[in-house]
Length: 67
Image (cartoon, rainbow, N blue to C red; front, top):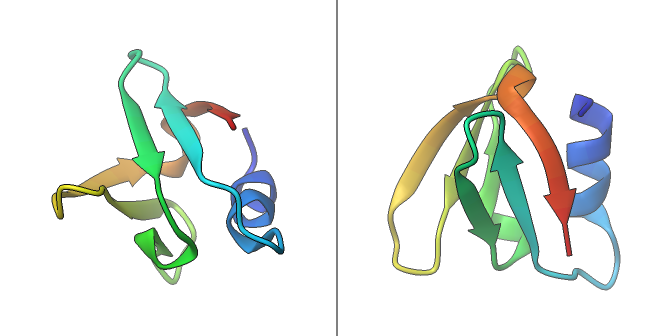
């Protein structure tokens, strides 16, 4: 999964919630546009889930996005 693909999912208008799945099978729901942040270098992203927990992920370990 490329960084551009992840950004495209976040920037779709109107926004549609989606789930990020990592290579180890963990899933993180992105409930709104503001719940997904990218580090400046683009190698790390932060997902803030609906329960207000945040998860720091390496972008190269993201295996898929589902809506």
